[in-house]
Length: 216
Ligand SMILES: C[S@@+](CC[C@H](N)C(=O)[O-])C[C@H]1O[C@@H](n2cnc3c(N)ncnc32)[C@H](O)[C@@H]1O
Image 1: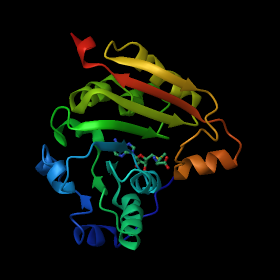
Image 2: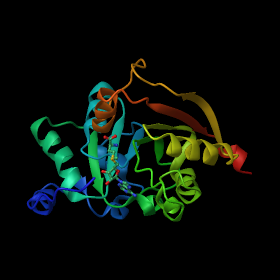
Image 3: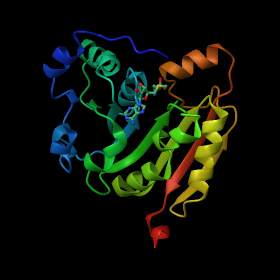
Image 4: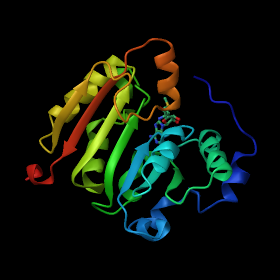
């Protein structure tokens, strides 16, 4: 899908540094201070236009949510939603998540969401998949013990690949999978999910739990 450039995105983002963080490494270890509380922090990697993060924040005021999105022309839509309906417990990071372990100190994060991540189907692109072992190893650093990673996708190839990566890593336990996640209780649909559901496509779901002690 081609990205439509939003010319005013960099300027608007620069005007709201407390809602969209473009140098997250500077806040590493200090996100509780950013939210001004010690509630658990959950992160969506590749949050797109922010619908999921914002709805989760409304439904779970006892938690903090961070959406990471690499493109300013996309995250700007999340920022606009926050400006229209301010929330204390939702912010965005605009940066490629490849260096996610530079954004957070060890065990700073209580949960991770991978919603409709780009599948990068070609073999030579495998390292870009958000469930490539390079990413899983970084998630293991920033996640608290017993934290969950919840993944939803319409792409069976990416689902199968991700399941294999979690299964072959001792530190993760795949607690639940679903081959048809439509209408699951408490599900918060994302922008992409709504499109795929409308098209009648199945939604694949995986819930993995991180067990730090199994690393040893
Ligand atoms: C297919 S969209 C899904 C968006 C949203 N999660 C949803 O379900 O509607 C994937 C998004 O992830 C972002 N993305 C992909 N790889 C990323 C990375 N390494 N770091 C940050 N964002 C990334 C893309 O720019 C894109 O906006």
